[in-house]
Length: 124
Image (cartoon, rainbow, N blue to C red):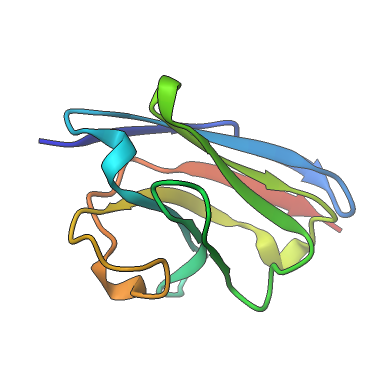
């Protein structure tokens, strides 16, 4: 059973940066596309970014394009999300997820196996 542990969240001022990490165990990490999602208070979970197993393909939500960068280190079973130019509307709990179906980074509904999440709070 896959297990994910997210970290790196915190409180930051608008315009600041954070880097989230997610360590994955229990599954061959290098075979799966990985993604980041977020859930703000009183809102549903939304897609943020995804990367293919090779790192060759990426997909970003329009709201984060040009500000967030997803990356992965298959040797460390870790996926990262570098968040720059943060805005108050980026405040949410951030989760990583894997795509065990072998579909693409654009098949957002195929991502799952959520961790406990890490809180990101951006003050104005």
